[in-house]
Amino acid sequence: MKYLSLTMFLAIIFLSSDNLNAQKYDTIQVTSTSINTKVLREGTHRYLVYAKMKKDSIRTLTQFWTRTIKRTDYNGTPAIEITQEWEDKDSVMHIVSGKLTAES
Image 1 (tube, rainbow, N blue to C red):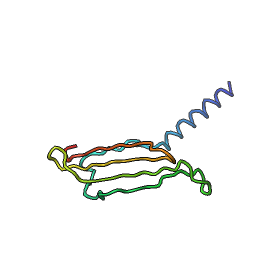
Image 2 (cartoon, rainbow, N blue to C red):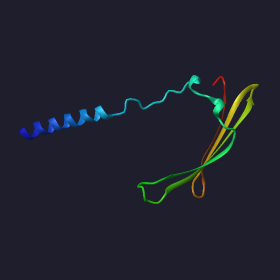
Image 3 (tube, helix red, strand yellow):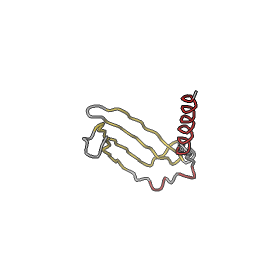
Image 4 (cartoon, one colour):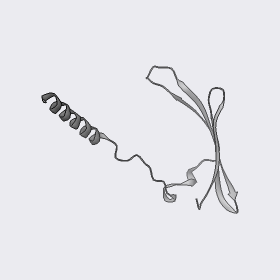
């Protein structure tokens, strides 16, 4: 019985302390008022993305990300077209393209 009481006490302390340190928000709300499209730089931009498990470890999961941003017209409405391509060591992993209008 003493063991069960101690176990329950430790479980309650552990669960309550975890809740005290938990982040309060895990979702970002994006609205048209929080986006400033005037700061987007048109053109093609390339990024080298990799992971390191420790400060002195080798780079792993190396990827190249290419993003092209251009201002365009979509059904008579000014729009921004964004195309992304993610490449692994020897293959294309992800390609997506989309157009955003001021009404989106």
